[in-house]
Image (cartoon, rainbow, N blue to C red; front, side, top):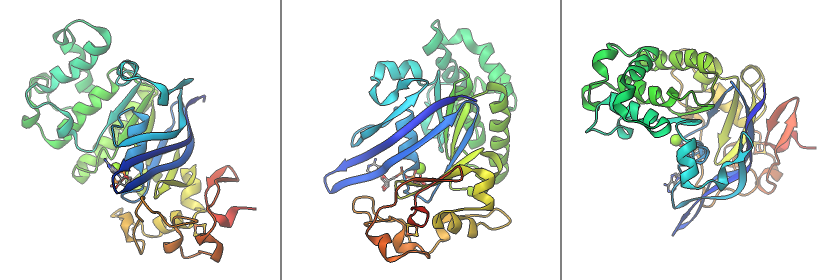
Length: 318
Ligand SMILES: Nc1ncnc2c1ncn2[C@@H]1O[C@H](COP(=O)(O)OP(=O)(O)OP(=O)(O)O)[C@@H](O)[C@H]1O
Ligand code: SF4
Ligand SMILES: [Mg+2]
């Protein structure tokens, strides 16, 4: 495998009148071609902010404060909107949680998928109807012939998510970023969509960044998992290692609250995620950490490698 993406010491801040929200604070990781990287962490840990940065979708008050995002040799933090328009959809595609908000109510679903082809290949969207029907078959849309002519309000949540997935895979992108793509759907549809993404991945060879609260799901589908806490990377490692031998106390907490029947909600670790305007000094997890030591409230952990794993916790330093 070769490296597709390298994120280096990325900082993304929201500059608000009441202070600076350090939503992504020195996060580094890489992604191989064809790899599925899962990102998990409680609400407010910076997952979506990271996804938006990777897709060039940050808008003020969000700013990339520093760091680099190297995608196939190109630093994405330096791209202008014109260059992003060529890249987004064609080489980097995004699937969001709530498909309804990304579809235009006044156009048919098929037309909106065809627009992806139009944007990158030219010609009129109507030329691409047959290709869109093929895509709908690929994403297992029921009755593709009819659904290309349906408007978003005539479709269920699951169907709309299949429309967004069709848009995402149309140009066989190198990278698909899926930010909670199933959380708005009911459980059976969720499972179908996840199954579909797995199948499509082996067909398109795309790398996938899959963001979710559902750590149990990531343990099933991701090659590696990154755990985020309060804007920081807590731990990154192969899924099997994270499952069998979590190193970071936060990862251990997340795993311990997973219920066998996969009714997991990460929020059941005692305490709550801190404000990212004025996060705790030292290790941001120290107020909730069962293993906290006196220095944890003073010294900020560095990110260190432990047996091929990356972890940010003073227990593993020196
Ligand atoms: N538009 C915004 N303006 C100001 N602050 C924001 C904005 N969007 C997010 N934040 C803040 O940035 C931090 C990270 O939020 P983000 O949405 O990236 O987290 P998340 O991990 O995706 O959470 P969730 O699981 O709820 O989707 C939070 O403190 C949040 O309040
Ligand atoms: S650095 Fe200290 S507080 Fe932070 S996770 Fe490690 S042991 Fe817990
Ligand atoms: Mg989010």
